[in-house]
Image (cartoon, rainbow, N blue to C red; front, side, top):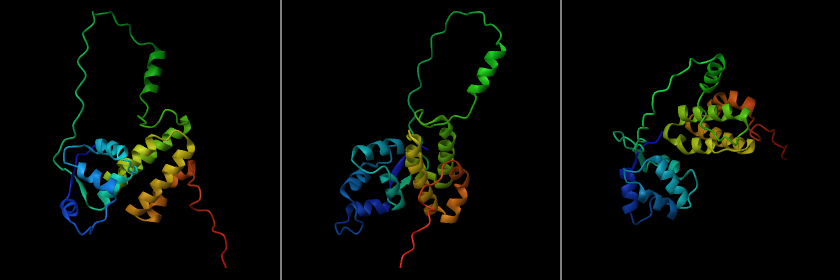
Length: 200
């Protein structure tokens, strides 16, 4: 979701207040100043990273109630590519059986994940993105980006832990476990269910 974001009234008051009632780190405050109701969430994520913020900075501003989605704004789309020049007409041969099989293979689900990720892990990463999108709404933007950029199994495991934490905050720990049961069966969340050592 590439939504247009703007400051809330609370953000305007926080930026004008001199008593530091809302304590924002300098980099987070700088990012908040850049949110103008014109930039998309993708642009702001890139801006946040360039300012030295953590990847979750935009989510934090949303959670604090300082940033909201502009309901009636349409995200700016890139200009369409110019239409190709028509080539001279050529006789087209009917497709062979091999062509049809190849076409069916190409019709598989579009997995917006890293091509460096092992092939058997790509559907798991895609499922993680779908869960984030379905249950976290706007807060899923950075998490989905993180999942998409996972190149190794370890990075995907770390993203799974972050997804589990986000789902637990948004719903509950038991609901998060329920939602992630299928994913965790393929890619267990290391350390979360490990028995704790006995303490005296």
